[in-house]
Image 1: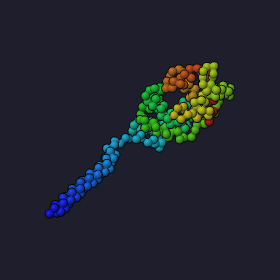
Image 2 (image 1 turned 60 degrees about the vertical axis):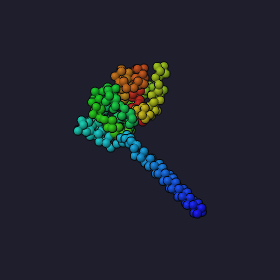
Image 3 (image 1 turned 90 degrees about the vertical axis):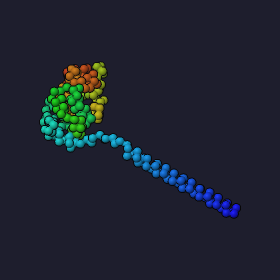
Image 4 (image 1 turned 120 degrees about the vertical axis):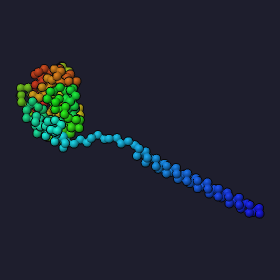
Length: 240
């Protein structure tokens, strides 16, 4: 009888341990499942951050060449020529210009920080994506070629471009726009091959306070004489 009672107690203890083991396993399994589910739930709950719109040179070419009548966008080609190769110094050559620089100028025209009645009207119809697309198209076009015309000032122009004018505190243009006029992407524009009359007009605009979207160029232009501006502008036209 005593032995039977001991067996019964032993059986009860085994049953208790078994139950505890089952509960423990259920608890561990449940914890593991919860841990596996948590990252998935967190991933699903993570907000999607929209990326920057992809730049589209093909869309830029379409706007540049044809405009968009439905939005009042005029074709850039009308003034700046096929592929950014303008036919006259009234309008600058835009081919191969650094995309970031072109985009910045269009933004400046739109916000009024660069004043030009014609370009301010043109830029007003463009959104930022349009500007980036047009710039992406232009940067892929062949580099503009030009020739210095004035043999009498070529040495003066070269001296200013490559060495500056120490007595006036004028730095060498090549320091920022590179020895061949290719510029430095995103910071300093390509100048080589540009129309001399256009470059000269911009230097005058900086000096006279008409163009105000580069304090660095304003400071430099105020130190140059008319003769020095014309000489360096003509020299720049022949750079390539």
